[in-house]
Length: 148
Length: 148
Image (tube, rainbow over all chains, first blue to last red; front, side, top):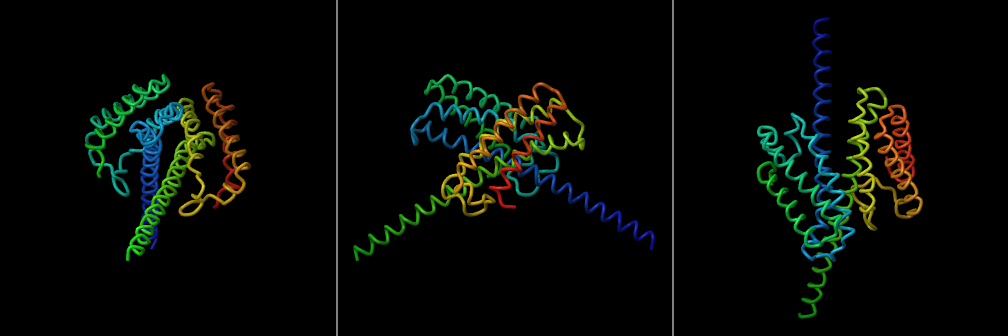
């Protein structure tokens, strides 16, 4: 009887720690998706300005570039081991080719930093070029590490 | 017959613009939730450090405070008119008492800016106090403007 109780208690504890882990993975996925969502909230209007679908507003563009620079470092801490399952579009390569993933991430961060610096300068042509270069790093990373 | 076609075309166009509006409201809600979610991703560990549930790491705390300062200005542009319905916990007062809401938002932004500045200084006691002051502004705003 006592043995059974211990076994049960053990199972309950195991269940609780699985559940805590599951919560942790769910949070991680939610947080990195939140960061990518805010990338889009800022890249969208910059793209529309760059493509002439929206009037080019240098100050607004620069504010969005500054937002993106700050956001650019936020998703990565949430790609924790074990958070490759569930409601995520991450490919397994994020973890199995972690070094290659890091290279892509670094390229994006560098491009976003440059975009924000260029945007401060206020040269419209340079801003559009830096935006294009940043968008390219998004695509390059998605090709290898994100499911459609 | 022609009249009917025009009327139908009109209805289709109306349907399309309703759908575009619905998308816009859904995006707005998603973007502001994303920002709040990243508030939590940074406030959580700062809180755990402030309460001694996690070792106090000054550099990590300061990095999170800097993240929060950058994030602090991101949700508000997404509280657009008409985005008060759907998957949102915003109370109608966000729009009906917009000036009062702005006062709360400004208090939070000021507190987050101060927290980031204090965190750069590296005085643990002051960091904890500035964190507490920031958390208070969250609660104060939620009381009036966020559903449970």
